[in-house]
Image 1 (cartoon, rainbow, N blue to C red):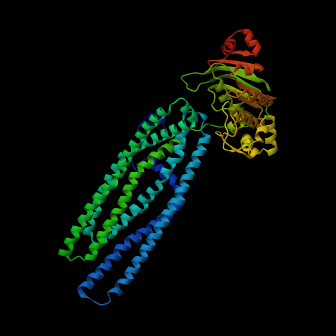
Image 2: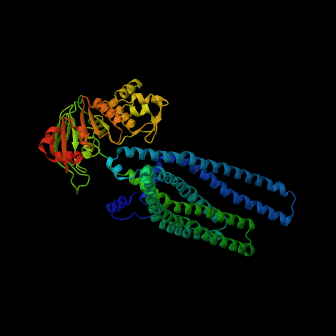
Image 3: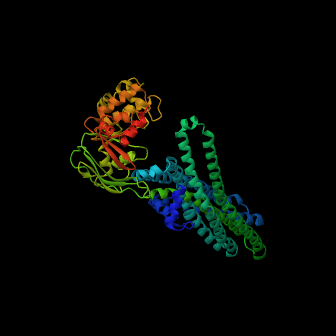
Length: 600
């Protein structure tokens, strides 16, 4: 969670969630684990078997020691015969204990934990699909990846804590406490009385580490985001000699991340030594009291040995509980970030669809929009675009050119007014249905790792190879595709060197051609390419624009001189509109823009 998000969350709730094992985050984790109750029930059976083994061993050892003691006093023949059944049973119990322990951890690691991790990652992936584009605009990709990968992995460890605390730990303590009192209530008292002290100290120590784990995970997300940003823009960083600055920022975040993690681990790890210390006091008390009872009360040595062994076993579940309480804060720090993402409000999406075949008429009626309510951007925007017309949108930086594209594609919803396509308000269409009307070719090309044919067919998954090749032919990229090592089956990606930036742009035009949508959005697609490739791109775009309603975000005004309509934006308003010739003749704002680019 970013610092801003965390602050906003605190402001909304008005108070910090109180730290405890069963606070809201802990209870929610229990609810998330509930669907796995069948597997956990099987784990409970395994735990009961292990407890049975743990309980049987001291009893058998105590009985064997009593036999040895009796033999030492009487020297009765047949010692081996009397000991062998018990020793064989002990060997069988230890073998069963090993097999059940293996089954328990195999179940935890390979069944429950994998289902838990996979389920959460699928839910996060589906959640991201339903979130508005504004969330991804404001959130570093590295932070999202960190939540989906590392945080979910840490959450899966909560399964271990639940099993150890609720099943193995408390259940074993109850069984052993009963047996201790049945064996000798006098030696059982110091063991049982010191247990609550151990638990209280453990819970207190574990709670101190929660704020450090929260900070640790927040910084972990920032670190991943910084690393993703630095390596995605690696050539730019190198070109401007900013490596040292990036390294310093990373080092500073790493130090803070390490410091918060160290404090979190300190408070988590101090729990177990505290419990071990209190348990040692109980162990000493039982040993001293047991020796006194043997000498003064005639209590059998075997009974004392049994109680001492059980006292040691009584400390094991306490140490498990201590580990669970300490790791609970670690796990909850990750869970809070994951739950914050899962709880984000989703964009509302109606189920309406376009009525009849789309013609491509677009109308803006009194549209208002702003990214920040305190800073109005588009105010009372009105325009009408007839089907098949080529409309260029120009204006200085920040005028709202890209914002109009965002509104057409419904990446953002308008604050007031209406946007209509063929007379139908797009707010009544599903977002998927609305976007099915548009094809896009942006200045920044995007290709995924896959074959050339798969990249071209990205917007038309059911397209045949023949259709793909035809679209590439129309987009003037068939000739260079066939020269690639495997032709249309050559694997490429965004950072692939097999194709140039201009060729990538031609592939995106072929993708738009194949999609065959009635409306088209173009963001200056001929930037940063050589003259010959620019001519090919322009020809391909002419094919693409034919018969479609086109919105062109123009940066170089020379590329839109033949547009049917030019909309000149300034501070979110259309201040001028007309053809290139008529706007120049007016010698207004468009004239000034054109002159500023070509005055020389």
